[in-house]
Image (tube, rainbow, N blue to C red; front, top):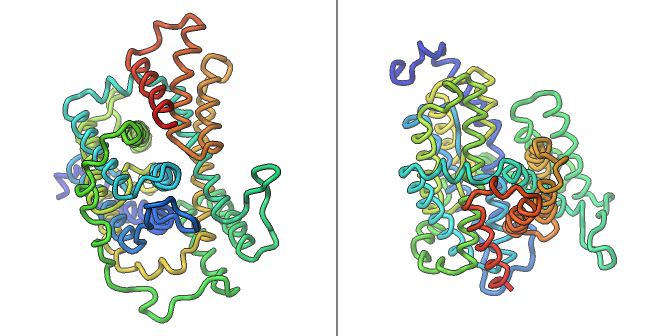
Length: 444
């Protein structure tokens, strides 16, 4: 095993890799509780006609298993210290744009995730991936990431009632004297403190502390005995296989845009994460990522597995840098993290204490982290600033990640053409321009 994972070459050992795997798991364990809350639309009282709510227990199990399988793929096949799980941003798009906004049943949305994963596998195996990555300008990639961050943070503020609806101004500050709102604000503050002080699992620990404080003050019902902490693995029956059963429902213009959005966001989120983690670990060779094809295959295969089980797109997590910071260098780090995700399956009873007030701070903090890509946008070039700004700002304002991407991708070729920079526009961008124009026509 040491030889397969190249311990000697990478200067690592079992103890270091184990601690790195545990560190990575703790840094991203929040997804086990945030994902069920997000996909089940917890805190949303009114669902569109014909739309039912996903089962939280099934989502929890699907999240843990998809994370374990995807992380194992990454560790064993690609041999990278990178963990995977259902992605933040993509789960918000799934729940709040596709299901809540478009009124598409979650079963059909899962079929869309499955389709995007299958397409991703084909693109990876055929080598088309590089062409598409190069076609999308870097500025728009950064804008999409930042816009999703703002959208996620907005969802967090809304779920915690820190921001509420207002007839006169559309939005307003909520009642900060409400005990539950105060609990959410406390969660944000404690998470900020932990992350500022350098705690690798600050988001997860922030959730734990917030939940404990909520129980102390009687805002959250505490678990009853050992059975309230450890229990049987939840059944996957409510969600398992629904993606295949409803696959025939994805052949519409609306679902085409949904699938393209799943694919687009996962595409560049994965690429960025792989490069970031590999660079920190010193695994880049001549500015290229060794075994990139295997890493991308692991990521896309994990999405197919996750969709089959009942969760949104599974993708590589930048929190893997926490494990790399702890010394993780080989795929064995990922194998260890995968083991902890499987162990977590037995802690589903804790879902009852992870309320929207507990998860909201995690959403807000993740939004802050994702918004950091704003610094990489060339704001001094107006033809770049316009589509980038519109991409970022329209995501939260229209409550739709897909709409933000569409508007930005429509304005980009227009402003670039007017500026005389037509040669810099890849033909694929013109194709996306037409697709998104049709998207608005048929959506209306």
